[in-house]
Image 1 (tube, rainbow, N blue to C red):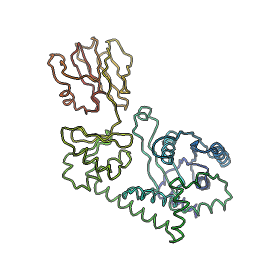
Image 2: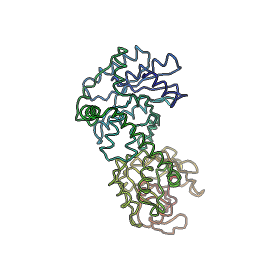
Image 3: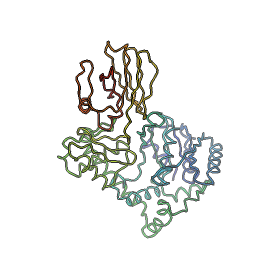
Image 4: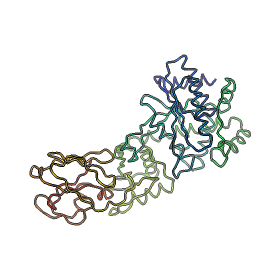
Length: 442
């Protein structure tokens, strides 16, 4: 039964895919998945690798890794064991999941698809957890058979270019846990038991051990009905996205994580909410609560025009500038700073506060931000052999090169379309106390 399910799912969702990375915890679910794929490898040209994430949360973690190594050696599947540090403020389950996927992103090959052993019982638990959070139809859609884990937008990852987007394939999502256990027993498979699975202090375990068995005992096929409800939610969400697609993409600048809110007040409140949710989802941001969403719309989007409103969402900041919303890092003001660059100074110069680097060539200054954006300033011929000064966080009036006309920095920032939060982090080029240029990036 399971082998035919897997064969069918592969044919429907990944007919051209041959390279798979299997998430192997050593538990019965992932062991069965690996065994199934090894069986199909005998009739299809499948290239299989496995990855075991060593969370270090149990005293048995080392023995679990050894079990996976022995199993993969016996079944001739290359295995990567990756130790991770589980930390953060989201709770141990969410933190472990985040650490796990970040590690997978570092090891998965561009031609590979991640395969996980999520099953019907997992789907029902995910639905109930979304229900507990008061999620909308997106959350209640639970897991998809095929989805993606997108590239994280954090500065550290952008600098190191270590994480990549990859596809997650869940071929057993419609199969109940009982079928997986029966398969394991029938084929005399061995697996490990994570002792934490019995601890109902964890939300999933509480549902799995204490709540869902009672519901399934009272109502036959309850799991299937919940999965059907999740599928209905997924279809409704897909319809909403299709209906809002043109409006969303007319306002969306994904590369800059920017959203146009011009004439936003002419949209219905429900449409405003859904567009903001879709934008945040496209930008890989966590979904705000209903209260947070109202605060974003009222206190940021519709704040008075002379304000510079901002709202913290997880570890990022939502800010408004010139009829656009931006998702940015949380910046502290950069203290005043200046550094002279000589004409013959060709070495790369690192700016403070992780702002970026500067290189002076024979005729230009090249500014590269930590995010990778680059600006090349062609110097006037008269200044190509002159010493220049780079300044940060300059305030007040400044004389402009070459005529010494004085102007307020506030107006200069506005002319150059530099948002308020970037102004202390944007390099200024001076010659003899005269402002030559503002080093903005596209």
